[in-house]
Length: 225
Length: 255
Image (tube, rainbow over all chains, first blue to last red; front, side, top):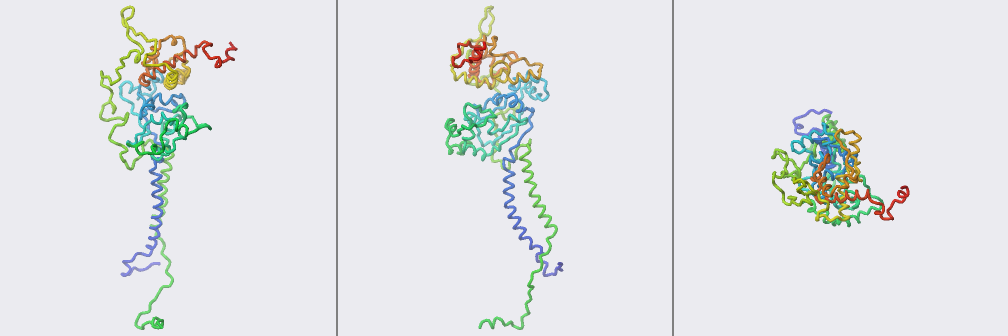
């Protein structure tokens, strides 16, 4: 249906403009649903943070050392029971074995360089919390929270990747209900294979470890100061 | 009636005309359809990318849209620094200085040996054969020693101390040229050593074994010594030292 544009019609919208209103309404409604959902999924730590697996200067395999050889996590990360920070091992710790084991390995060259020059190996931190969070390893490790709770099956990883979102909401899930995440004192915190048995009693463990009430556990000051 | 006057149209007005049926709306322009379709299909692309990001590990750190002081201008533990040549933010002690409380002046407790004049007049190391007075040998200490032994020592010496830990077994299996079979702790050669000698071995190492002084604090080293002693005794104990109810009667009968 073609119409000649006469002088009086020049200032009028073309007829297809009638579609603009429903199109705008549809777009607005669709966008109002789509954008928050897309942002929520996209910006979620489950998307952004989980799966972070940086390339390390030495292709160190936790699957071999912690898994196959069964070396305790604390052999290298030996500060976890006393300090907030889980120390990366000194080069000396690597050289305890690698002075005599695989002494010519090319992959170990950065470790030997560090040993001779005194310059540290520059490992890349995988589980990196924001600076306004004061996570304390000793507070968790000494109260029955196993390594696997936050780090996943490190003993099966050739390359360490972040398994949990480490978001505030994720932390609070456990802080509000710590019982099911605890393990008895006679189970090693570093044991990645342990699963609670039928007689597992999280509430009793909470008492045993003297874990504070929910109000304290989810107080801002518990983690931020 | 009022109706009569209303119905009468004045003769001088033009007759109004109405289109009773509105004409069909025109076709939606091709451009508009394309833009709409591209938007709808395009809106799936981020979702697909997000799903992919959840499945595939990435070597890139997370993107923080809002910093919110998440990265503060401060050094965290063991963080690197561009200021210092060796790249450490944490500084090493200046050579020749001693940190408070780290003088380690108690030969018995901190070193396990003392320097004494030998028979020929030369200074020699004399290992202490007793636990220092700071260490009370209790079941709790031995338990602590077991805990530490299993973390730091068992990787080579094995849980029973006989030198068949996982690392040793793999090294032997792989025929590592420089590897030497790990010593058995309950062996006679080690059993006769004074506790100070064992302490010193943990502290600074011996032959092919590195020192563990950097990883194991002083009190824990003595706890490990106590546990090593209990391993040695336990595996060489006379049968009458075992409580009767704990004796393996079938083994005793076999002898």
